[in-house]
Figure 1 (cartoon, helix red, strand yellow):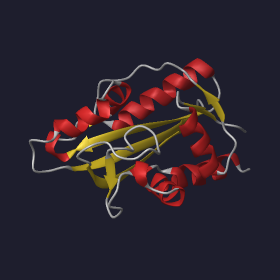
Figure 2 (figure 1 turned 60 degrees about the vertical axis):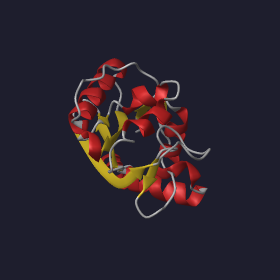
Figure 3 (figure 1 turned 30 degrees about the horizontal axis):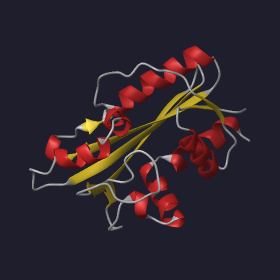
Figure 4 (figure 1 turned 180 degrees about the vertical axis):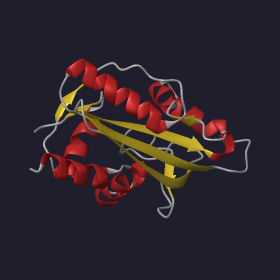
Length: 184
């Protein structure tokens, strides 16, 4: 059985299908955004809502970027910065007055088919660059420096990028679940 990945980002849909080793349908559906910093709660709400709209097995991927200096903000609200003019630059400026540029990504992937609900969460430690750097990647990749890499995700080569993508997103856990659940 095929799963529909609900996202407005075609690059994310293609990359996720590639790394899962599974063909996914793709749909862009406007979903309500809960005003919460609880990523698992947000993902569960969105995946249930996506199922209610499409009535087929669905999965979602929600991403947040938590700054230590701002007690976890912007969290899931990062998308509003990413979509804004100079949003990444402004995110870098938000923490200039702090000594702490540490941050972590939080990625939650959720699946729902009307019966089974599964939510997987993964975090990655790192820091925020002083300025957006690099040409590759999506979203916050130009400002997030994964711990141990010394450069932004947008500066990584393809092999390193895929390595970090797997560390940031709970793809292995989701793949294992889908392989067992759908017994392909």
